[in-house]
Amino acid sequence: LFSLSQAFSTIQSIFFSIVRCMHFNAIEIATMSNSNDESISMLISMGFDLDQSQRALDRNGGNVERAIDFLLSGSGADTSQGGVGSGTAASASTAPPSSSAATSIVTSPTSQYSDPSGRSACTAIALTMAHHALKSLRGASSSSTSSVVGNVITTEFLETSITEGIRNYSILKTRKGSVEHSSAEEILVQAGNMNDKNNNNSLLSHLKLFENSPRQGILDSHPPSIESMNINPVGLYSLLYHCQEDASRSCTGCGNFVAAVITKPPETVLVLLPIFATNISGSGDSSGYNNNSQSYILLDSHPRPNQHAPHNPQHGSYALFHSDLSGLVGSLKEIFPVTELGPDVPEMMGMMYNSFDVYPFVLPG
Image (cartoon, rainbow, N blue to C red; front, side):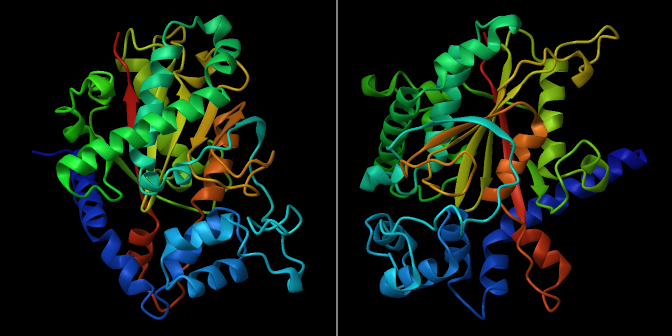
């Protein structure tokens, strides 16, 4: 007989399976009154204001990729409204206020949009970044983690990972025919057959996905803190905290970090989380964590020039460093804000629209 906790876990698993299957249908139905809502939300998440986003989509027939090119090329500037002369994104004064607590930023002029074949490659890029970061950081001692991280996550790291991620994506696309916004599982399954000499011997297949993954969650508007775990046990803060905790309890020889690929269609980003040290009682706990600064890192191949503070003036990819999980989740909430669909939309539909997946990986020794 199932215990109550087992029964709840089973029901929760079934619910999120339905959520994942119906996610895009929910988006389509919920935005029936305005078919551009999802595209507008995506452009706003990159730092463009509502007027710029709507104008770019209107000028490009609703095609979000052409709209991004239009905005980044400077064609989206609205000088009559005091818009940005470069036409990239809203100025810092008009950008949404930052809720993140990033301590520093590494930037690169290269983004997934630098190569026309990389427009939908963010998941492949995130997985490639995960592999290289975990491999490079695995040998760092806990006392030197902070300095080693600074030497690994560099402009060159971003550019190399993006270039290689786009190449991985292109190989998959050639073999499969279409991998537009593929999930991490789909890419990893395909990567298992990628043994090309130009593809580092199927490097993606070396990543180890945690059990019971992907882990499904629902976005919320609560301030990121450990208290928010009681309010929303499947929120960003809670899921990422448990990724750290699970790694500390079950993974030996995996280094000091967990790489969590976070997907909310159509976007994917990567975060690096320090694994909790084992405390005296022998259980993974944040109280036993070797608290080095700048250990919580967000890596993003999308250009968001005014979305975060400190800002990325290069309109390319970036890595944001944070001293704690609250700061990291604050940055993630800027990329993946809660979407309020209004009182006429069923609650279940809103949950589906605001669902996301977390794929936690380690790189075994």
